[in-house]
Length: 129
Image 1 (cartoon, rainbow, N blue to C red):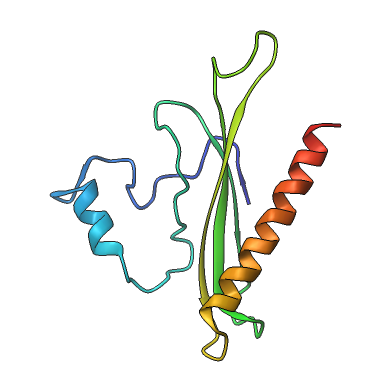
Image 2 (image 1 turned 90 degrees about the horizontal axis):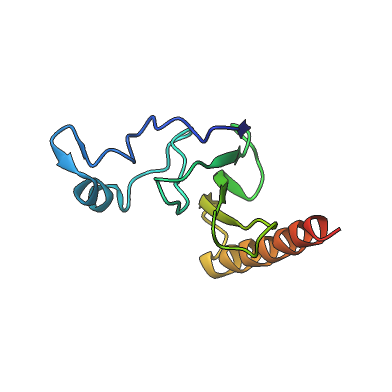
């Protein structure tokens, strides 16, 4: 799904204090939590600059390699980071994966890295046309 103004902050990631806890406390508590559908990981972004997001996730009850897969591509313009008359953009990516028990984690990580490289090459090719 495309989020032209960035994903809504349903999980209050951008709030410094939420429900009496600092952002750092909430991050520490979230480590090791079960993946939750529609609670997407957050790619890096400078919160003072606008950004656009594209989210993706596996379909429910998919019998593929993952019990669940979801992620976000985030695009953020970077004013002042390019020569005059040109533009620069930060592209970040965050993904959460819950593989089937029979899949070794190293195999899954390797496959994600391969696919990410292929995706970034395709993006570069399109952007340099």
